[in-house]
Image (cartoon, rainbow, N blue to C red; front, top):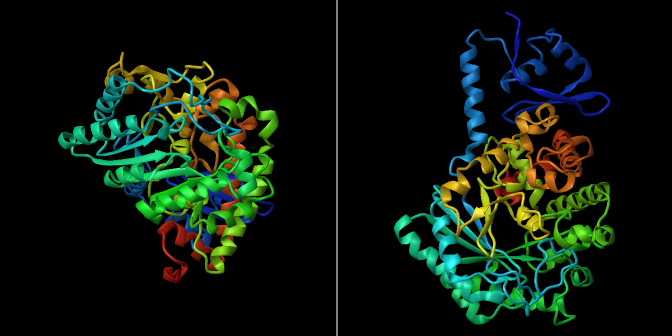
Length: 483
Protein backbone atom coordinates (compact mmCIF):
# COMPACT_ATOMS: atom_id res chain seq x y z
CA UNK A 1 0.00 0.00 0.00
CA UNK A 2 1.08 3.61 -0.47
CA UNK A 3 2.24 5.27 2.70
CA UNK A 4 -0.01 7.58 4.68
CA UNK A 5 0.94 10.94 6.12
CA UNK A 6 0.70 11.53 9.83
CA UNK A 7 0.41 15.09 11.20
CA UNK A 8 3.60 17.13 10.65
CA UNK A 9 4.83 20.68 10.12
CA UNK A 10 7.69 21.88 7.96
CA UNK A 11 9.81 24.87 7.08
CA UNK A 12 12.59 25.55 4.60
CA UNK A 13 15.67 25.38 6.81
CA UNK A 14 18.19 26.61 4.25
CA UNK A 15 18.61 26.67 0.49
CA UNK A 16 18.85 22.90 0.12
CA UNK A 17 16.97 21.41 3.09
CA UNK A 18 13.63 21.34 4.87
CA UNK A 19 13.05 20.88 8.60
CA UNK A 20 10.10 18.70 9.62
CA UNK A 21 8.58 18.17 13.05
CA UNK A 22 5.49 16.47 14.42
CA UNK A 23 3.23 16.96 17.43
CA UNK A 24 5.47 14.96 19.77
CA UNK A 25 8.71 16.76 18.89
CA UNK A 26 10.28 14.18 16.58
CA UNK A 27 12.19 15.94 13.80
CA UNK A 28 13.92 15.23 10.53
CA UNK A 29 15.92 17.14 7.93
CA UNK A 30 15.17 16.37 4.28
CA UNK A 31 17.06 17.51 1.23
CA UNK A 32 14.88 19.40 -1.24
CA UNK A 33 14.62 16.49 -3.70
CA UNK A 34 13.64 14.00 -0.98
CA UNK A 35 11.10 16.46 0.42
CA UNK A 36 9.44 16.85 -2.96
CA UNK A 37 9.28 13.06 -3.36
CA UNK A 38 7.95 12.74 0.19
CA UNK A 39 5.03 15.15 -0.24
CA UNK A 40 4.28 13.65 -3.66
CA UNK A 41 4.02 10.19 -2.04
CA UNK A 42 6.84 8.93 -4.27
CA UNK A 43 9.59 8.45 -1.68
CA UNK A 44 11.46 5.15 -2.12
CA UNK A 45 10.36 2.86 0.72
CA UNK A 46 13.88 1.44 0.96
CA UNK A 47 15.58 4.83 1.29
CA UNK A 48 17.06 6.12 4.54
CA UNK A 49 14.74 9.12 4.35
CA UNK A 50 11.66 6.87 4.22
CA UNK A 51 12.82 4.65 7.07
CA UNK A 52 13.68 7.63 9.26
CA UNK A 53 10.31 9.28 8.63
CA UNK A 54 8.50 6.02 9.35
CA UNK A 55 10.39 5.36 12.58
CA UNK A 56 9.51 8.86 13.83
CA UNK A 57 5.81 8.59 12.90
CA UNK A 58 5.75 11.12 10.08
CA UNK A 59 4.39 8.45 7.76
CA UNK A 60 3.14 4.89 8.03
CA UNK A 61 2.72 2.03 5.59
CA UNK A 62 0.86 -0.25 7.97
CA UNK A 63 -2.82 -1.06 7.72
CA UNK A 64 -3.11 -1.03 11.52
CA UNK A 65 -3.24 2.73 11.88
CA UNK A 66 -4.56 2.48 15.43
CA UNK A 67 -1.22 1.16 16.73
CA UNK A 68 0.64 4.11 15.22
CA UNK A 69 -1.85 6.62 16.61
CA UNK A 70 -1.61 5.00 20.05
CA UNK A 71 2.17 5.35 19.93
CA UNK A 72 1.86 9.04 19.06
CA UNK A 73 -0.72 9.50 21.81
CA UNK A 74 1.63 7.96 24.38
CA UNK A 75 4.44 10.27 23.33
CA UNK A 76 2.11 13.27 23.39
CA UNK A 77 0.90 12.46 26.91
CA UNK A 78 4.52 12.18 28.03
CA UNK A 79 5.36 15.59 26.56
CA UNK A 80 2.35 17.14 28.29
CA UNK A 81 2.77 15.36 31.64
CA UNK A 82 3.83 18.68 33.17
CA UNK A 83 0.09 19.38 33.33
CA UNK A 84 -0.68 16.39 35.56
CA UNK A 85 -0.21 17.97 38.97
CA UNK A 86 -1.46 21.53 38.46
CA UNK A 87 0.08 24.51 40.34
CA UNK A 88 3.30 23.62 42.15
CA UNK A 89 5.25 26.91 42.15
CA UNK A 90 3.74 29.52 44.47
CA UNK A 91 5.57 32.86 44.54
CA UNK A 92 4.92 35.08 47.53
CA UNK A 93 5.77 38.78 47.93
CA UNK A 94 6.17 39.55 51.67
CA UNK A 95 7.12 43.16 50.90
CA UNK A 96 7.66 45.54 48.00
CA UNK A 97 10.41 47.41 49.86
CA UNK A 98 13.91 46.99 48.48
CA UNK A 99 17.42 48.33 49.07
CA UNK A 100 18.46 48.07 45.41
CA UNK A 101 18.06 50.54 42.56
CA UNK A 102 18.23 48.11 39.61
CA UNK A 103 17.98 50.06 36.38
CA UNK A 104 15.57 47.50 34.92
CA UNK A 105 13.42 46.84 38.01
CA UNK A 106 10.34 45.12 36.62
CA UNK A 107 8.09 45.43 39.69
CA UNK A 108 8.46 49.16 40.42
CA UNK A 109 9.76 48.43 43.93
CA UNK A 110 9.43 50.74 46.95
CA UNK A 111 12.16 52.31 49.06
CA UNK A 112 13.05 50.95 52.50
CA UNK A 113 11.30 53.83 54.26
CA UNK A 114 8.01 53.52 52.36
CA UNK A 115 5.01 52.47 54.44
CA UNK A 116 2.07 50.23 53.61
CA UNK A 117 3.84 47.74 51.36
CA UNK A 118 4.41 44.86 53.80
CA UNK A 119 2.21 41.77 54.06
CA UNK A 120 0.02 41.32 57.15
CA UNK A 121 -0.10 38.04 59.09
CA UNK A 122 -3.79 37.71 58.31
CA UNK A 123 -3.11 37.86 54.58
CA UNK A 124 -0.08 35.56 54.90
CA UNK A 125 -2.16 32.94 56.71
CA UNK A 126 -4.81 32.98 53.99
CA UNK A 127 -2.14 32.74 51.29
CA UNK A 128 -0.67 29.62 52.87
CA UNK A 129 -4.14 28.10 53.21
CA UNK A 130 -4.77 28.81 49.51
CA UNK A 131 -1.42 27.34 48.50
CA UNK A 132 -2.17 24.03 50.19
CA UNK A 133 -5.47 23.68 48.38
CA UNK A 134 -3.47 22.99 45.22
CA UNK A 135 -3.73 19.29 44.24
CA UNK A 136 -0.03 19.17 43.33
CA UNK A 137 2.01 16.68 45.41
CA UNK A 138 4.93 19.13 45.21
CA UNK A 139 4.70 22.63 46.65
CA UNK A 140 7.51 25.12 46.12
CA UNK A 141 7.13 28.46 47.89
CA UNK A 142 9.40 31.10 46.39
CA UNK A 143 9.79 34.45 48.14
CA UNK A 144 9.94 37.39 45.73
CA UNK A 145 10.04 41.12 46.25
CA UNK A 146 11.02 43.84 46.62
CA UNK A 147 13.80 42.37 48.70
CA UNK A 148 12.32 39.64 50.95
CA UNK A 149 15.07 40.05 53.55
CA UNK A 150 13.77 43.53 54.40
CA UNK A 151 10.88 41.72 56.13
CA UNK A 152 12.52 38.48 57.21
CA UNK A 153 10.05 38.07 60.08
CA UNK A 154 7.25 37.63 57.54
CA UNK A 155 9.36 35.13 55.58
CA UNK A 156 9.77 33.14 58.78
CA UNK A 157 6.07 33.35 59.58
CA UNK A 158 5.08 32.02 56.15
CA UNK A 159 7.65 29.21 56.22
CA UNK A 160 6.52 28.03 59.64
CA UNK A 161 2.84 28.32 58.75
CA UNK A 162 3.50 26.26 55.59
CA UNK A 163 5.36 23.61 57.56
CA UNK A 164 2.47 23.42 60.02
CA UNK A 165 -0.05 23.00 57.19
CA UNK A 166 2.15 20.33 55.63
CA UNK A 167 2.00 18.19 58.76
CA UNK A 168 -1.52 17.40 57.60
CA UNK A 169 -1.17 17.71 53.81
CA UNK A 170 2.08 15.70 53.61
CA UNK A 171 3.31 17.18 50.34
CA UNK A 172 6.90 17.57 49.20
CA UNK A 173 7.54 21.12 50.42
CA UNK A 174 10.41 23.31 49.20
CA UNK A 175 11.42 26.90 49.92
CA UNK A 176 13.38 29.34 47.76
CA UNK A 177 14.17 32.94 48.59
CA UNK A 178 15.06 35.38 45.80
CA UNK A 179 17.46 37.93 47.25
CA UNK A 180 20.29 40.25 46.31
CA UNK A 181 22.10 38.80 49.40
CA UNK A 182 23.19 42.20 50.71
CA UNK A 183 21.11 41.98 53.90
CA UNK A 184 21.95 38.36 54.65
CA UNK A 185 23.20 37.66 58.17
CA UNK A 186 24.57 34.62 59.97
CA UNK A 187 21.36 34.36 62.01
CA UNK A 188 19.27 34.35 58.83
CA UNK A 189 21.47 31.69 57.27
CA UNK A 190 21.20 29.44 60.31
CA UNK A 191 17.42 29.73 60.12
CA UNK A 192 17.32 29.07 56.36
CA UNK A 193 19.58 26.04 56.76
CA UNK A 194 17.29 24.62 59.44
CA UNK A 195 14.32 24.98 57.11
CA UNK A 196 16.18 23.72 54.03
CA UNK A 197 15.68 26.88 52.01
CA UNK A 198 17.51 27.42 48.72
CA UNK A 199 18.79 30.79 47.52
CA UNK A 200 18.20 32.41 44.13
CA UNK A 201 20.19 35.56 43.54
CA UNK A 202 21.10 37.91 40.72
CA UNK A 203 24.50 38.41 39.13
CA UNK A 204 24.71 40.44 35.95
CA UNK A 205 28.42 39.97 35.43
CA UNK A 206 31.78 41.43 36.32
CA UNK A 207 32.17 44.29 38.81
CA UNK A 208 31.57 47.36 36.62
CA UNK A 209 28.63 45.83 34.76
CA UNK A 210 26.93 44.50 37.89
CA UNK A 211 27.34 47.86 39.62
CA UNK A 212 25.73 49.67 36.67
CA UNK A 213 22.79 47.28 36.37
CA UNK A 214 22.09 46.54 40.04
CA UNK A 215 23.36 49.34 42.34
CA UNK A 216 22.51 49.20 46.03
CA UNK A 217 21.04 52.31 47.63
CA UNK A 218 23.50 52.67 50.49
CA UNK A 219 26.87 51.80 48.94
CA UNK A 220 28.89 51.99 45.75
CA UNK A 221 30.46 48.62 46.56
CA UNK A 222 27.56 46.53 45.24
CA UNK A 223 29.66 43.81 43.62
CA UNK A 224 32.04 43.56 46.55
CA UNK A 225 29.07 43.19 48.89
CA UNK A 226 27.59 40.51 46.66
CA UNK A 227 30.81 38.51 46.57
CA UNK A 228 31.25 38.73 50.35
CA UNK A 229 27.67 37.62 51.09
CA UNK A 230 27.82 34.88 48.45
CA UNK A 231 30.83 33.38 50.21
CA UNK A 232 29.08 33.64 53.58
CA UNK A 233 25.92 32.00 52.24
CA UNK A 234 27.81 29.09 50.74
CA UNK A 235 29.74 28.66 53.97
CA UNK A 236 26.51 27.97 55.86
CA UNK A 237 24.24 26.45 53.19
CA UNK A 238 26.71 24.71 50.86
CA UNK A 239 28.01 25.41 47.38
CA UNK A 240 24.96 23.98 45.61
CA UNK A 241 22.46 25.99 47.63
CA UNK A 242 22.81 29.20 45.58
CA UNK A 243 21.82 29.78 41.95
CA UNK A 244 22.11 33.05 40.06
CA UNK A 245 20.21 34.77 37.26
CA UNK A 246 21.50 37.45 34.92
CA UNK A 247 19.58 40.09 33.00
CA UNK A 248 20.87 41.58 29.75
CA UNK A 249 20.82 45.35 29.37
CA UNK A 250 22.43 47.40 26.61
CA UNK A 251 25.52 47.57 28.84
CA UNK A 252 25.80 43.76 28.74
CA UNK A 253 25.98 43.49 24.95
CA UNK A 254 29.40 42.56 23.65
CA UNK A 255 30.44 41.22 27.05
CA UNK A 256 28.83 37.78 27.32
CA UNK A 257 32.25 36.09 27.44
CA UNK A 258 33.36 38.26 30.35
CA UNK A 259 30.03 37.63 32.10
CA UNK A 260 30.53 33.87 31.78
CA UNK A 261 34.09 34.19 33.07
CA UNK A 262 32.80 36.04 36.14
CA UNK A 263 30.23 33.34 36.85
CA UNK A 264 32.96 30.72 36.68
CA UNK A 265 35.30 32.79 38.86
CA UNK A 266 32.61 33.00 41.52
CA UNK A 267 32.03 29.25 41.50
CA UNK A 268 28.83 28.92 39.47
CA UNK A 269 28.51 26.08 36.95
CA UNK A 270 25.66 27.52 34.90
CA UNK A 271 24.17 30.72 33.54
CA UNK A 272 20.83 31.59 31.94
CA UNK A 273 21.19 34.28 29.28
CA UNK A 274 18.02 36.28 29.88
CA UNK A 275 16.87 39.18 27.74
CA UNK A 276 15.22 42.28 29.15
CA UNK A 277 11.54 41.94 30.10
CA UNK A 278 9.24 44.84 29.15
CA UNK A 279 7.65 45.52 32.53
CA UNK A 280 7.86 48.10 35.33
CA UNK A 281 10.86 50.42 35.24
CA UNK A 282 12.34 48.34 32.40
CA UNK A 283 9.43 49.37 30.19
CA UNK A 284 9.44 52.97 31.41
CA UNK A 285 13.19 53.37 30.78
CA UNK A 286 13.30 51.26 27.62
CA UNK A 287 14.90 54.08 25.65
CA UNK A 288 17.89 54.01 28.05
CA UNK A 289 18.61 50.30 28.53
CA UNK A 290 16.89 48.32 25.76
CA UNK A 291 18.28 47.03 22.44
CA UNK A 292 17.05 45.41 19.23
CA UNK A 293 16.18 41.73 19.67
CA UNK A 294 18.64 40.96 16.87
CA UNK A 295 21.48 42.21 19.09
CA UNK A 296 20.48 39.83 21.88
CA UNK A 297 20.28 36.91 19.45
CA UNK A 298 23.77 37.55 18.10
CA UNK A 299 25.20 37.94 21.59
CA UNK A 300 23.41 34.77 22.69
CA UNK A 301 24.94 32.77 19.85
CA UNK A 302 28.41 34.09 20.60
CA UNK A 303 28.02 33.41 24.31
CA UNK A 304 26.72 29.89 23.73
CA UNK A 305 29.62 28.98 21.43
CA UNK A 306 32.04 30.33 24.02
CA UNK A 307 30.44 28.10 26.68
CA UNK A 308 30.56 25.07 24.39
CA UNK A 309 34.26 25.73 23.81
CA UNK A 310 34.84 25.96 27.58
CA UNK A 311 33.22 22.55 27.98
CA UNK A 312 35.35 21.10 25.21
CA UNK A 313 38.40 22.36 27.11
CA UNK A 314 37.32 20.60 30.29
CA UNK A 315 35.18 23.13 32.20
CA UNK A 316 31.67 21.84 32.91
CA UNK A 317 29.42 24.87 32.51
CA UNK A 318 25.82 24.99 31.31
CA UNK A 319 23.78 27.62 29.49
CA UNK A 320 20.34 27.12 31.05
CA UNK A 321 18.12 28.22 28.18
CA UNK A 322 19.91 25.94 25.72
CA UNK A 323 19.71 23.07 28.20
CA UNK A 324 15.96 23.53 28.49
CA UNK A 325 15.40 23.64 24.72
CA UNK A 326 17.73 20.69 24.09
CA UNK A 327 15.71 18.58 26.51
CA UNK A 328 12.59 19.43 24.51
CA UNK A 329 14.24 18.71 21.18
CA UNK A 330 16.29 15.60 22.02
CA UNK A 331 14.25 13.81 24.70
CA UNK A 332 10.64 12.62 24.94
CA UNK A 333 10.16 14.10 28.40
CA UNK A 334 8.24 17.09 29.69
CA UNK A 335 10.08 20.19 30.88
CA UNK A 336 8.64 22.78 33.20
CA UNK A 337 9.39 26.35 32.22
CA UNK A 338 6.42 28.63 32.86
CA UNK A 339 7.33 31.20 30.21
CA UNK A 340 7.50 28.65 27.40
CA UNK A 341 4.75 26.07 27.81
CA UNK A 342 1.68 25.11 25.82
CA UNK A 343 -0.75 25.74 27.30
CA UNK A 344 1.03 28.53 29.16
CA UNK A 345 2.09 27.78 32.72
CA UNK A 346 0.45 30.94 34.01
CA UNK A 347 -1.79 30.10 36.95
CA UNK A 348 -1.72 26.35 36.31
CA UNK A 349 2.02 25.77 36.87
CA UNK A 350 2.95 28.90 38.78
CA UNK A 351 1.13 31.75 40.47
CA UNK A 352 2.11 34.79 42.53
CA UNK A 353 0.57 36.29 45.67
CA UNK A 354 1.25 40.00 46.18
CA UNK A 355 1.86 41.61 49.57
CA UNK A 356 -1.81 42.75 49.75
CA UNK A 357 -3.27 39.33 48.93
CA UNK A 358 -3.86 39.96 45.23
CA UNK A 359 -3.28 36.84 43.15
CA UNK A 360 -1.87 37.07 39.60
CA UNK A 361 -1.33 34.44 36.94
CA UNK A 362 2.41 35.17 36.81
CA UNK A 363 5.12 37.47 38.10
CA UNK A 364 4.90 39.38 34.83
CA UNK A 365 1.19 39.92 35.47
CA UNK A 366 2.06 41.40 38.86
CA UNK A 367 4.56 43.65 37.11
CA UNK A 368 1.79 44.90 34.83
CA UNK A 369 -0.39 45.54 37.88
CA UNK A 370 2.32 47.72 39.39
CA UNK A 371 1.58 50.23 36.61
CA UNK A 372 -2.19 49.95 37.12
CA UNK A 373 -2.99 47.22 34.61
CA UNK A 374 -4.95 44.58 36.53
CA UNK A 375 -5.98 42.52 33.50
CA UNK A 376 -4.41 39.30 34.80
CA UNK A 377 -5.51 39.50 38.42
CA UNK A 378 -7.16 36.22 39.47
CA UNK A 379 -8.58 37.55 42.72
CA UNK A 380 -7.58 38.23 46.31
CA UNK A 381 -7.12 35.64 49.06
CA UNK A 382 -9.07 37.86 51.49
CA UNK A 383 -12.07 37.99 49.15
CA UNK A 384 -12.05 34.94 46.88
CA UNK A 385 -11.96 31.19 47.40
CA UNK A 386 -9.45 28.83 45.80
CA UNK A 387 -12.12 27.49 43.45
CA UNK A 388 -13.16 30.98 42.35
CA UNK A 389 -9.58 31.87 41.44
CA UNK A 390 -8.18 28.60 40.08
CA UNK A 391 -11.28 26.98 38.63
CA UNK A 392 -13.10 30.02 37.32
CA UNK A 393 -13.88 31.31 33.86
CA UNK A 394 -11.11 33.91 33.94
CA UNK A 395 -8.19 31.47 34.26
CA UNK A 396 -9.85 29.06 31.86
CA UNK A 397 -10.04 31.83 29.25
CA UNK A 398 -6.36 32.75 29.71
CA UNK A 399 -5.31 29.14 29.26
CA UNK A 400 -7.60 28.67 26.25
CA UNK A 401 -5.78 31.55 24.57
CA UNK A 402 -2.32 30.11 25.21
CA UNK A 403 -2.28 26.75 23.42
CA UNK A 404 0.21 27.06 20.58
CA UNK A 405 -1.35 24.04 18.86
CA UNK A 406 -4.31 26.23 17.88
CA UNK A 407 -2.94 29.79 17.82
CA UNK A 408 -2.60 31.65 14.50
CA UNK A 409 0.77 30.93 12.83
CA UNK A 410 1.97 28.95 15.91
CA UNK A 411 -0.27 26.05 14.86
CA UNK A 412 1.63 25.75 11.58
CA UNK A 413 5.14 26.54 12.87
CA UNK A 414 7.73 23.79 12.57
CA UNK A 415 9.16 24.76 15.98
CA UNK A 416 5.79 24.66 17.78
CA UNK A 417 6.47 21.34 19.63
CA UNK A 418 9.37 22.98 21.48
CA UNK A 419 7.82 26.38 22.06
CA UNK A 420 5.07 27.95 24.15
CA UNK A 421 2.83 30.95 24.56
CA UNK A 422 3.06 33.87 26.98
CA UNK A 423 -0.34 35.60 27.01
CA UNK A 424 0.82 38.18 29.56
CA UNK A 425 3.75 39.37 27.46
CA UNK A 426 1.62 39.35 24.32
CA UNK A 427 -0.94 41.54 26.06
CA UNK A 428 1.74 43.89 27.42
CA UNK A 429 3.48 44.35 24.09
CA UNK A 430 0.73 43.87 21.51
CA UNK A 431 -2.56 44.53 23.26
CA UNK A 432 -4.13 41.07 23.38
CA UNK A 433 -3.33 37.62 24.75
CA UNK A 434 -2.78 35.98 21.36
CA UNK A 435 -0.45 38.59 19.90
CA UNK A 436 0.77 39.01 16.33
CA UNK A 437 3.57 36.62 15.47
CA UNK A 438 5.10 38.44 12.46
CA UNK A 439 5.89 41.43 14.70
CA UNK A 440 6.37 39.56 17.99
CA UNK A 441 9.92 39.97 19.32
CA UNK A 442 9.70 36.97 21.65
CA UNK A 443 8.63 34.78 18.74
CA UNK A 444 11.56 36.00 16.68
CA UNK A 445 14.02 35.40 19.52
CA UNK A 446 12.83 31.88 20.28
CA UNK A 447 12.67 30.89 16.63
CA UNK A 448 16.19 32.08 15.87
CA UNK A 449 17.60 30.24 18.89
CA UNK A 450 15.71 27.05 17.95
CA UNK A 451 17.22 27.22 14.46
CA UNK A 452 20.70 27.84 15.84
CA UNK A 453 20.54 24.87 18.21
CA UNK A 454 19.13 22.64 15.48
CA UNK A 455 21.93 23.69 13.13
CA UNK A 456 24.44 22.56 15.76
CA UNK A 457 22.59 19.28 16.26
CA UNK A 458 22.49 18.75 12.50
CA UNK A 459 26.29 19.05 12.28
CA UNK A 460 26.40 15.80 14.27
CA UNK A 461 29.76 16.78 15.76
CA UNK A 462 30.55 14.07 18.35
CA UNK A 463 32.17 16.57 20.72
CA UNK A 464 29.31 19.08 20.61
CA UNK A 465 26.85 16.22 21.02
CA UNK A 466 28.76 15.15 24.13
CA UNK A 467 28.49 18.66 25.52
CA UNK A 468 24.75 18.78 24.91
CA UNK A 469 24.08 15.38 26.47
CA UNK A 470 26.28 16.21 29.45
CA UNK A 471 24.02 19.22 30.07
CA UNK A 472 20.83 17.21 29.64
CA UNK A 473 22.00 14.41 31.94
CA UNK A 474 24.01 16.68 34.28
CA UNK A 475 27.16 14.58 33.91
CA UNK A 476 30.70 15.34 32.88
CA UNK A 477 31.57 14.75 29.24
CA UNK A 478 33.82 11.83 30.21
CA UNK A 479 30.72 9.92 31.34
CA UNK A 480 28.86 10.43 28.06
CA UNK A 481 29.18 7.57 25.56
CA UNK A 482 27.34 8.27 22.32
CA UNK A 483 28.43 5.07 20.57
